[in-house]
Every structure is written in C-alpha cells, then in structure tokens.
Length: 352
Ligand SMILES: [Zn+2]
Image (cartoon, rainbow, N blue to C red; front, top):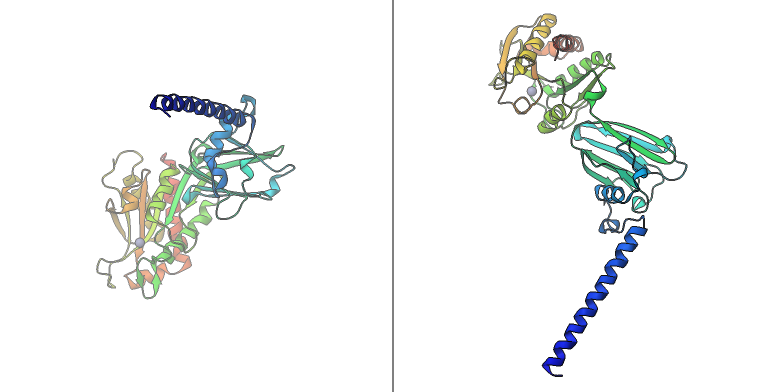
C-alpha cells in the first residue's frame, strides 16, 4: 500500500468511526430519554448517591410530576401506608433516617425520587443499615414533616424557628469517656446530667418551645457537635451546665456559683453577658449559694464559637466538701435546675 492510499484509507476509517460514534450517541440519548430508569454509574454501587438520583429524576420529570408543595416525593411500593415507614431525626448530627419496609437493593434505580436538594448535604440510599434505609444529612437542624399519599412519601424539612415560639439548646458538660472533675469518687459529668434532666422536666411543660439536648444520657459528645447544635438550630439561647473545681484541684473553702460568658462578643442587647447575668442572679436566688459573679469564658470553645447567646453555668464547687455533698443530692440538683429555668423564663421575658 502506498503512503497515498494509506492516507485515504485512514481518512475513510476515521469518517466511518465518527459516523458510528454519532449514531451511538443518538441511540444512547434516545434510550436515556425513553427509559425512566437511572443508568448512571451509581446503580452498580451500594450505597447509592441519592442526590445524584434526585437530580437525575427531577431533570427528567414532566412539570406536573414535580411535588410543587413539598420538597421531596419518593415512590413507595404499591399500597404502602404510614405504618411501613419510620422516621428518626438526630438533631446533633443533622441526620434524618427513614426506614421503609420491603424495599430491596437498588429500588430507587427504577423508582422515582423527585424534588429539590436544597439544604441537603448528603442523601444515601441503602446505607450500611440496610436496603430500605435512607440517610439524609442536612446543612442545619431541621424538623421533618412527612406523609404518605397514593403510594408516595412526601418529605419536608422545616427550621425549628419557623415551627416553635422559642428554640433552646441545653448542654450537660462532659460525658462518656470524659468525666470532667472527679472528687471523692463523684464525677462531674453525672452531676451535670442530673441537673439537665431535672431542668428537662420543667422545660417539658412548654410544648411551644423546642429544646434540643446535647445529651440525655452518659454519652460522648464532641465540643463542636454541642456548639453546632446551637448554631445550626439558630437557638434563642444556649446554656451549658457544669460544676467547678479550684485550679489546683485540691479541696478548699472556695464555694458558690459562677456563670461564664463571652467577653469578646458585643455586650448590648441579647448578649452572652446579659444571659449569663440573668442565669447567675436567678440561680443564686433559689440555691442560696454564694454569688461569685460572672467569669470571662472566651477561651472556652463552646462559648467562643457560639453564634447564639451563650451562658455556661458553674453551679457549685466540687472541691468544697460541703457543696459537693449538696451537689450530689437530687434535691439540690432540682433547685439548681429551677434557678436555670427561672433564668430562661426571665430571658424570654426580656425578648431573647
Ligand atoms: Zn466542666
């Protein structure tokens, strides 16, 4: 074959393959348009990226199919009712988990999932916990509203500030592997939690308030998780409950109540300083403990990084023998809780 002929031949082959590629592209496009089935890579994987699927189906959907009044519409097995569905909302992790009975692997690669991915950071279908488990990670704390209608699940995510009169975050310091101070065998984490649980009984009286607790048991919770719960719920206020020790940790005569605030944040209006002041006054008014005043707390992570009014209550000194004995009684824990509760009422009266 001469070089000349070879050239012509190569050109022909190139032209033919270009034509073939063109036809193939048209066929693939046609197939994609006709099949309401997700043919992307994610189909082969478990878990599947639900956000990719959501965008895919939504881009393909006819206009009247889109769930105009709801954020997301998910196809369910025929005849499925509310009873077949469980929804859990872990505010601390901004993680919403939906369990749907009887859904097999890759169900949503052939059943639709329509709507908007607004405020959704991640959506996993068929995670580690099973085929019918859908895990949705939100960009903030939301309450989930859901209903089943004509074999569709409708989901909406609503900011607690839009649903409740007030939003609070209450934190029991330390927990799990972090006991805080330990004096005479008494662990600070347990005192903090006991006070929080007493406070919870009082706050439960207010159905129009949404209260998020960083923990209601002896659990490990990260500092960032605690403060992000408050920030991402846009809480009206964030109160952290602790108990004090002297710097050297030795038993001493020091006793009484202190409340920490952020001295580097503006101090007018609904400030950390004002909230701390209210909590301090109301707490010592009922406990009768020594008012040790406000303490600068900007060096404390949950105070410094809080974007909402924050106060950290140091209820009493564990390094004082008498006070420690009191702190360890349910009776006194209840009184401290009452003081903090009165502080919350006063803060809301002032417009926090
Ligand atoms: Zn502490």
